Image (cartoon, rainbow, N blue to C red; front, side):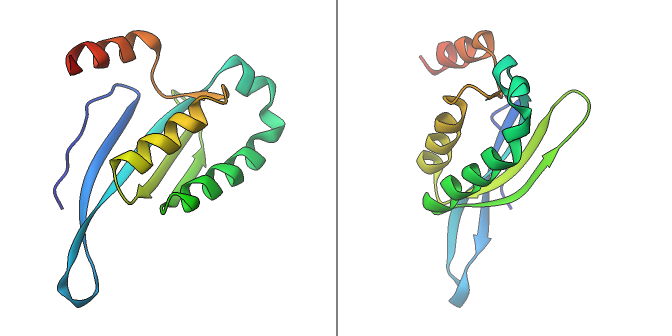
Length: 119
C-alpha cells in the first residue's frame, strides 16, 4: 500500500491501493479522522448515534463505507475510519458533515495554514 499523509494535526488522510477482482487495481481514499465535538455537538450528545447513522448513510450514498466509528475519551471525542471511491467524494462528505456544526477536525488557524500552502 502507498500512503500519502496530508499531515493535518487533528486529522489525516491517506491514499491506499487495493487489489480488485481479476487482478485489476483501483485507488480508494481511506480517511482517518480524529474529531472533537463543538459546543453544539456536546449540547446535543443524545443525538450522536443518530448522527453517526446518518453519516454512514451519507458515506454509502457517495460510494464509500465506514469501517470504524468509535467514541473515545481523551484528546479526541470520535475516531472514524472510512473508505471513499476518490478524493472528491471523501472531502465532500466530510465537509457536509462538518457544516452541520456538531464536530470539527481542524480549527480555523489550521485551515488558514492549509489554504496558504495551497496557494
